[in-house]
Length: 107
Image (cartoon, rainbow, N blue to C red):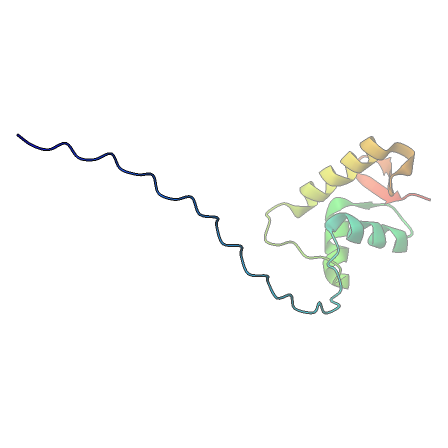
């Protein structure tokens, strides 16, 4: 006859070790990159006449304010973002639609 195995005792509960404190590097002051909307607002503020999204993208790239990270239609994305800001913020928006596809800086 085979002997029955004694019931196994549960392993003693141990507390997990705390992670060592991370050493932080001192932050260096680097200029924050502009978003496409911020750069478009700067371009329109400097422009005396309304611009379309494609013209704003070209002007932002020429001034070195913003470049597309490789998207195929950055002008369509910018146009959509500007319209979204105009519709959500209303009179507080940085942009004003003057004509179909053309915007100017709000006063």
